[in-house]
Image (cartoon, rainbow, N blue to C red; front, side, top):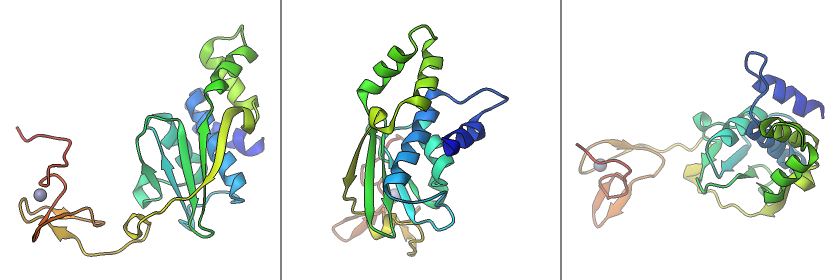
Length: 191
Ligand SMILES: [Zn+2]
């Protein structure tokens, strides 16, 4: 697979091949692009949005193979702790979810029983078929207008802390407009 080897080379650092998770992520992206019949990188058009379901290797691999990234709002993290991602083609409105199969690891290690684990996974993730690696399903994803790349709207200012809030992430409680933090949906506590 020419494309796969191209991206693996691009992900190599100082002559060291990428982690197996990166290779699996690249395979995942290529599988999805194939199903959606999207050729090559989509980053020129911003017509592809990818929702990744875990952190670590997967977002990096998806960014590499699709050009989708947080910075232009075409990559979203919905952390469910799963090695899975959904690829949404905004032109055709079709979406495909690709999830790594639990059996893929076992198959990989069976394929190269005498090789060290990381190496065995790296080799196998190149060799196994998409069917062996992934469950693939067409799905429906309803992205809100404010979640799409290119969405424009004025920022709202929180009635309590005064911080600006973009992309309609504000919370309305009665006649007050609050940021998520002031509305109690926060991940930090002031010291
Ligand atoms: Zn606030």
